[in-house]
Length: 173
Image (tube, rainbow, N blue to C red; front, side, top):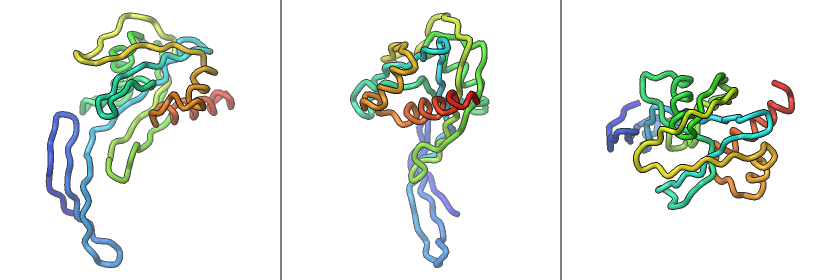
């Protein structure tokens, strides 16, 4: 598989990749290369979760999301989860547990997202990056699930994270 760089930025790159298919044809695709990311379910207590309202320039709107952020290689995902939780929500976790890892859009992007649940939270003040437009939104667990059903949560990682953790909670896993 041959590749050539098309674009390099501080957070990702784009490569044109050539691949021979089983029928012998050469196909090219543009692939976004990404170092990976984390997303965190911050459980304020057994019945409340801290979501965030986050303005996203790419869609020109404020989305309701789980806090998340890009890995800073060679940073391990768990370390990134603690860092991003503090930066975006102002909480410090007493415990962090990885639940799953998944690809966000494998047709064009190699980013792997690591999903964590954070518990035993202590408020210590947010350390948001300059220009971030983020606000905490603490809701009950049931309200968070209802925000999905009501289509108020449109962010895929948040839908996946909340629904998976709801399933695990119901199984006491």
